[in-house]
Image 1 (spheres, rainbow over the protein chains, first blue to last red):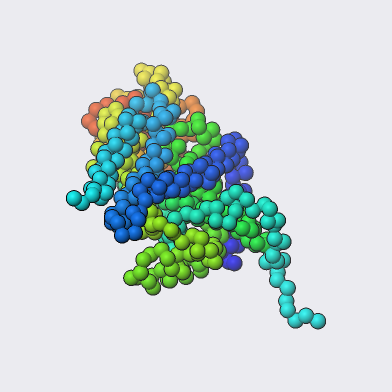
Image 2: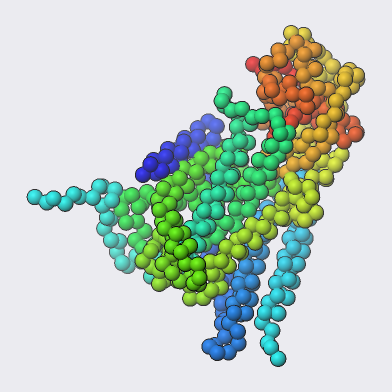
Amino acid sequence: MRLTLLGTAILLYGVVGLLGSSGPSPLGRWLLLVVVGWLAVDTLLTPAVIATGRLLRRLIPDPPDGRGRPGRRRAARILVGAAAAVSGVLVLVALPFVDGGGRDPSVPSALPLDYGRNLVLLLAAGWLGVGAAVAVLLRRRS
Amino acid sequence: MSTQRRAPLWRRPFPEPPAGLRRGPFAPGAIRPAGRSAALSARLGLWLGAAFGICLVTGLISHGIQHPPSWFLWPTRPVSLYRVTQGLHVATGLATVPLLLAKLWAVYPTLFRWPPARDAADLLARCALLVLVAGAVFELVSGVLNTARQYAVMGFGFPAAHYWTAWITTGALVIHIGAQAAVVRRVLRESRRRTSGPPDDSAADRTAENPGRAGNDAPADPVTTRRAVLATVAAAAGAVTLATVGQTVRPLSGLSVLAPRRPGLGPQGLPVNRSAAGAGVLATATRDDYRLVVAGTRTLRLGLDALAALPQHTADLPIACVEGWSASARWTGVRLRDLLAEAGVAPGADVRIESLQRSGAYRAATLPAAFAQDPLTLLALRLNGGTLHLDHGYPCRLIAPNRPGVLQTKWVAWIGAHR
């Protein structure tokens, strides 16, 4: 209860500051990003992650009882899922840089790299490694 | 007469919503995520709490230096302290992206909990949770956009928005901690007690907010067992960090292929945030009749030759940007305290420094007396052995230890006691 009161006081302090003269302007643009950001995560990103998980379970299913080695298939699936998640996060973080809208011709030292190319190379290198590991994991024993 | 006390108003159950509304994602079993559990949510929550704590403290430090309340004291040493705190602020924020996404994924089923609110207190707690989620997403999105200089996309003043939303988010987080601390403690205790069994099928792995629905959320498939999810989050945070932290940790700059800056890249081997052209000082900074005015009991008017004739000192000091990048450089110029003494400015006075810029939030800065009198604080005329580049503040710029780059005023025109 004490934490609830303390939290409410802090929250209200923030709201008062936000609406006050030292708050951001225009407030409508602030609200737009708040709502768009939240909706993007809860209606697009998270459902996409869940759908990817389901797809992976379908693509790399556990073998029927008694055949094959479920441990290896699971490891492969976890590896691919993790690689997809890491790739997704990298793409998300890199997007504003790849877009390049923040570039200023008079400041070439800001955003100096070819972020699109670097992102592709980074992902390609990562997936090459993951592909090799998955191939080893799913290889049939002769 | 009834001896039973009625529940307080905020704990009186709301009427059950019509069952017909329980559709779509609210339908029973509609969202059955594999691998999600209370133990996972609790751990992610702890990590996230630590990350937000670091961002809050370092963010408040940065805000305090730029808008110091009377009680706020920021030391001049170590010279790279701000470089560390702000580098940590941005690096932690970037690493928090996967952490927050994983946490929101882990608790996703509770977004569609039924009934949506049991009573008034529950409704308020859920509203606070919505504020927490939206605020946390905003802080990370706006922070990343700012490091990518996407000011137009935001369309609002970033520092004020980021600062006040941080308070709102912190308040909602404290409310959330108050509501969930007991659950987290219990879940982690139960989880630790089982050290030998598989991680995802015990009481500790029930959904924290829905302890009775363990059956629904127990993973049918371990694609994403708890340990795998935590390892994935750590890997994603590590990847994002490695890909960007070279903007402030120079030895890693070659690895940081997504870093917004390269510490050695820029005029005279140092990045620039605002160019002379962007600041609108190209003409005024290159005029032959440039004079630096130092106003005290006497007024000094010093041209470049006069400044160069004064005793010169050299200092190795970093430029540490609020956007998270930083780089060290060797500066040579006149000690500010020598100029202030010559002009008769009292040693205990805070000092105001104005730029040739006509406008802009950072056209002037106030230097606390301790910084103004520091032997390392220079009015730099040279950088890394050459004449200061126009984009670094030619004819002369302020460079002081342990300050954000935006307060290291460039193209200095006027110096005097702060009133």
